[in-house]
Image (tube, rainbow, N blue to C red; front, side, top):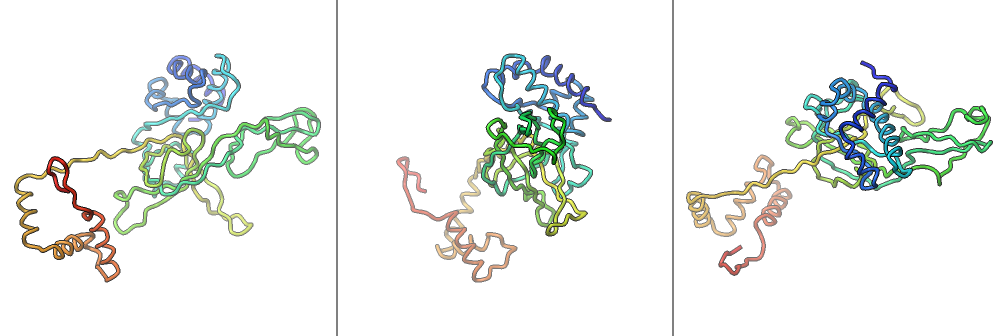
Length: 323
């Protein structure tokens, strides 16, 4: 099913007016610059529209941002950067394992459980560029490509094509957005035995930057994209997949309290009685990653881990507890 641009705009306008008008008012008042939506909100409003969003996210979200921007301006908002639409809580049938993302998933909205491994610095990117022709006519172009600045092909003022006239980038009139790259990786417990975890590069923009640190587990709602691999100056028939982040959900793992009964206490006390201090340290050291043979070098690594886990200065608190 293909949804044409004229169809997407009125659907977004109806959704903004009928379902999320209060959230839009927060954007108008300057409290935020993004509209956070749950997928089930769109699905309840129009199931077909929700399905098309999963199949054509670039087009649908772009039309949504335009509709939201125009609606905010009509409601009295000051001229501002384009507000972002964030869609989260995608259906489970859109969940993908990172290693299985292929050409069939490109330019579709998917989600994946991943862990962030690297985070880059923030770099401003031109979001809406303004070019001035030699005849002083200005042309505004939305920049969708993250690798190359898109210039006008023809001046709408004088009618001359690119190459016959010069277009100057008016930096002071351009709209900028913060841009950041992160590297993601499959979560370790989902990696098949003996396999290396798959990884990928994700582009974050706007309010999503600086939201994750290396080691953070997230559910990434993103759009796979492709760009041609290069060998020197030549393009190859192979493509590399990268991702544009639409939204993210941070996974939190609840801490579980360890409870020990009287039998456990007796076993621990017997273990201490049967093993002097140095033997107890050796026992704990050998229990760390027992499947990895402890060469002299690796044994010292295991011993260091054991001391970090259980070592320290003995202290007695006011209630008599010894730690």
